[in-house]
Amino acid sequence: MCVKQQHRDSQQRSRPQAALTEPRSNGRWQGRQALTVTALPCSADNVLVLQLSGDIDLCTVERLREYLDGHLSGAYRGMVLDCAEVSFLAACGIGLLVEIVDRARLAQVQIRLVAQSRAVLRALQVTGVNELVPRADTVDEAVALCTI
Image (spheres, one colour):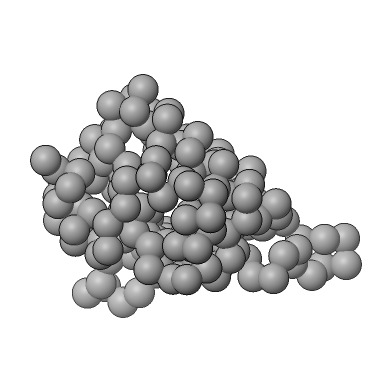
């Protein structure tokens, strides 16, 4: 897994990013677009906001699972998955969302999904998962719902 740290000038917070794809033997990236996960600053205590950007597919889903599992182990009472920049959501990604929501309930962590793109909303609607995964229209709304 390729992990990148992104540092801005000293006046801005750094945002750790993880690129969650593996290179093929010829050095090219698998999938159409690498999935990048960025932890965003959040004003609410104990709420983690993760911005996902790229494709959630067979090439990225296992690494994303490992990444999310690592954050479900107690330090946060809420987790917001901002999927506004997700360009493709495969069936394996939908399965992962259901799995993460179930694990979060057991860990007493509230999960909120922010999704507005047709690619994500349509995949959730067609599979019926839109009824299972708590969703908000904006990150601020999702954070507020995690603090209730």
